[in-house]
Each structure stands twice: as C-alpha cells, then as structure tokens.
Image (cartoon, rainbow, N blue to C red; front, top):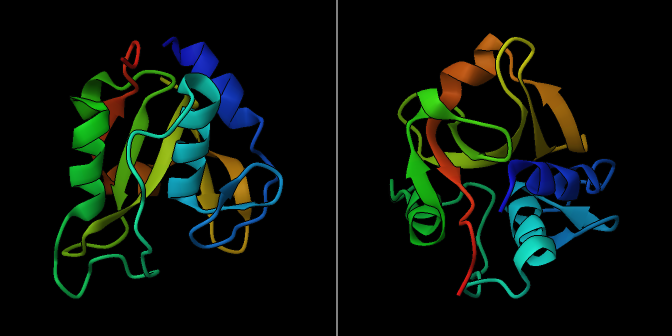
Length: 146
C-alpha cells in the first residue's frame, strides 16, 4: 500500500479524542487504535483480535508485546530508512518497554508524525529531536493483505 494512502487515512483521524483502548475515528483512539483504524480503512478486517491492555502495557513484566505484534503484521525496516506512511515504535523512557506508535507523515527536514497522545488526542506533531531519540523500531504496512 502506498505511503500516501496510509497518510491520507491517518490524517482523517486528526482531532479524534484520546480514549485508552479505543480505535474509532472521531469518537476516541489511543496510539494502537489509530494504527488499527488505519489498517481497517486501508485493508479491511484487522489481522488479529486485540486483548485488553493496561496503560502501562507490559512494563511490570518487561515484555515487548507491542513490538512482537508489529513484527507479526508489519514489515520491519531500518529506522534510518523510514519513509512516509511507516509506523514508528517509541520507547517513552530508557529501560521501559516500547509502548507508543505513530505514523510518519513527512520525512527529512521538518519530519512529522501522526499519533494519539494522552490529553491531546490524535495530532500531527513535529518529529523533534526528543521524539527521534525515542524511536526503537520502524515498520511498513504490507503492500497487500492476503
């Protein structure tokens, strides 16, 4: 699927309020719900059911559950090769599990990404140096889903 198609779908979610575990455009979404919602809009049905999850994800156990799920359905690529439409995985603090996702909407100088952020909802933000330092993985959506 083209990056432009992914970005267009993601931008349709901007302004959706932040709601933990939700993924309904215009009604409520968290960062995973945004990626899931874009998947549904572009490909149709989601590839797997998502179990309930807490706001701390799997931090107490130290399990990289979000990373593992991304590896099951998205194509990993080098962070240095990220392009528009790719999913970025962030570690919010050193030593913690990766638990935030965003979709790269503009690469290069002035890079930006779309994500659902607590107390802000779905927004398009500059991929500033503090955000860039938190990126731990990059994935592209599949070209097609069989």
